[in-house]
Length: 566
Image (cartoon, rainbow, N blue to C red; front, side, top):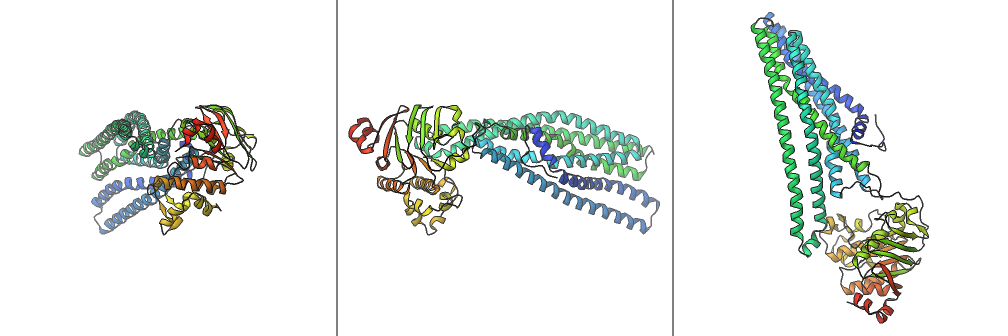
């Protein structure tokens, strides 16, 4: 029985119910087999007691052979039922964890971000550790039921020997579970806090890895590492607290289970000494007293795992139920078209207004880097349209009325710090494998020398974040990827800051040639790119203050000359 992945989970309890509901079949078979395993384990000391009883009455070889055969059947049943029962449950557990990982990852990769208040490192922890712990509920429930079966079978068998023994097991089990259920609540609270702190530490280290090179550049690495050490220390202290709580729980459970086993053994011994039970029943009682330690331990561990699964499910619900930052429109932009920024106020932008004509190559010389970054963020729809004043129009249609997927298919905004992925040069340039302009993009971005350096060519292996490439090579690889996308509107943000002047001149000419007839906007201070553009807009103090060709601005605007001259 399955439940569609599209079913809406509104809380941690909903997530657990969905997980249980769509694994009913596997859990039913697992419960049957694990119950058979526990029943077989319980039958072993019962069989030993019966063997002793009958052997003392009938000392013939037939009784011995029958006894050995019965033990062989019990051992085979125990072995096979455990093997296939755990196989079924672990397969269901693994599959369910995979489903939730995909669901959480899907939320994180949606074009419209969700307002979960979590960093990417925290979402990563939720998609891995929390998904695994939530799926553990698939194993917990069958093991809980099978352990209960074992305890009940043992209680019935002991009750048949003497009612006081059976009642002792039942009363003792209820008392143990009552004590441990109270302790498990603290485990759940402590585990939730630990998971949150570990996730924050993961987010911090992810941020550090991303910004490691610039941190080293201005000497901020020691302060950053100190910040991470503080977050990690908090996570460590909470982990120690959780370990202490778990240790107290495990110690209490072991002590209570042992006390019950000792009580059953002593009571059986007293009854046998008093002649109220036979020697065979004494052997059975002693064997069951030792045996019930395992199902009682498993039974007493279950509340802890249930609380951990619930805590993880609640953290997953933070991501899965978070509302989108914005609600995109349903429309799609028409092919071609211009790009218009109409009185946009956001961050450092103060009523910014300009238009990039369809098929034109426009450059923006931003005097303040913050204004350039804010403009790129608005165009990339990383800022929800409802959070800023003014409007951005593509082909005459406002971005707020368009679907985010359609906007990004139509208009590509390539940031100056674009990510490089582990793979090859080719997969970084053309991740989907569908571009028809890879050779042209490689040539235009001047990546040809990198390709020529390696006999594998475009199949040269690239490490995560481009660790085996220089800064200039990474930047040209990112530019090649943007050009290979061949989008209707292309926005480039500082695409050549890490390359030398000669290469920059060639790249500027190549971009102008390759993008001829396609709408292109470059936010840059590079003289080569500014000169290659049809016109230059000067962005100063959040507004456009001048507009002309690069050479005319150099001749007439002293501030412009000082800002862009190298």
